[in-house]
Length: 560
Image (cartoon, rainbow, N blue to C red; front, side, top):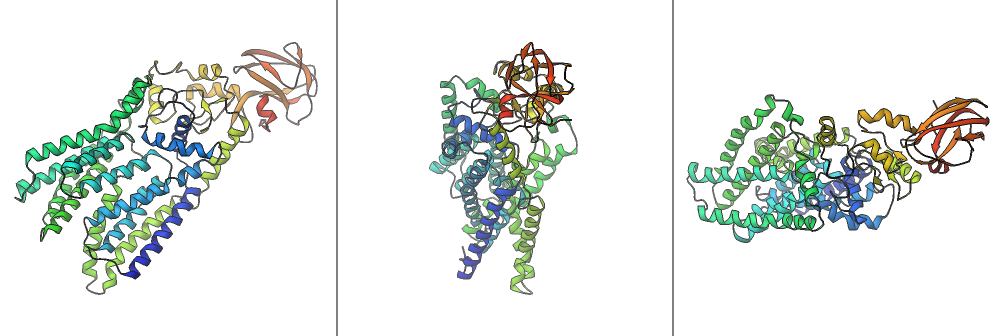
């Protein structure tokens, strides 16, 4: 590969320093995705001796959370935990870019072109933004790129095949979406072998050698998943693991599966195009270096393009982070096109070869900025919401949230309220053997849950929650309810559902005296579920009955 000049390396270093700065700024500003607290809550569970799937629900493979637990534990309970854990992802991002550079180097003869491919990948919105977040996909992308570095590093046989399988097995242990990546990569390999043998009439691996290499890859691929399966089986949680990771995510009629349309033909339409582009790449064979370069480019085109179109065609639920694995492959192919066009422009002036890459890079930066990576304050809001919950509750208290936003607190309800679970709740197809109860109200009462977030509460339970919990000035609801205007001497009958200590609070903070259930009104009084009778002797006005612990910690009910 043609080396870069000293000035070129200085410019590259300055560029990647700017990239690092941009990433750090994004860590503090880019919105907090609902998956992030879910992952953090599972990591907290591991750090506190809980077992994923058995003790708390999660529908992701476990390797990422297991590896993060020891580091998470070092930070302790803090409302801004999302920030250090996001910063922890920066080294993974740096390794990603190193792998992208190595992959681009397999295609280009010039270091500058490989660096441009790396730069365009780094700022590609569907790569930059998801890898800013704290999520399993950070490790997943790294392992995927590592497997590509291995498979394109030389002849696919022996130790190379085994370590490729080992890396892909670790990727499976991080995300089950690896199944689609492996399908696309295997399809690309099969197409390339067929093109070389039957179309271009070139030497290819013997069938026996292919079978041997695939067998070694499969052996390597089984090691990490088998170890995890054995671990969970030894803990009596194998059934829970199989359900949460595999069965739970397969819901008939989910997403695209219930909406047949033109999108389901995209893969079939585009796949011949990818094969044709791979054939053009394989034709570059002036020497052995060109042949290896063409094979790598063909592999990237078919794998990246097929994965992208498979997501668009038949993957039921598609999220932004799903496009991170094919992004480097697509951007390497795009860079090839940009430099091929640029060579024609360079006939007028050598510097014109960089016009299109610079233009694309500017567009990428503009898109990232437009999506709030550097200007929104969602991280601050997330920290404030968590701080409120931590202030109002103790470590031993149960809370209710959608997907683990409380992070450091046990959830009253086993199931996380994400898209797939909500679909299962609507259709009544949640299993009954993984937790004590699938009834949300029953779980809240049984665990004496006095604090919750209303976000994503199922519609069937939302009114019940509003009847038994009360808003304050923040986003946390606590056990209690509005009593309306109660005049001295009047009776107010009300019901509570959550057994807890309650206090009677007046809107104007004036002292209130009277009788509650036949006993003199105290600053705090335990109320069992059921109806209660309050008679005011002095004070009165707008009143509310509120969980005492919240009142003692500064909670002020929001009166109508």
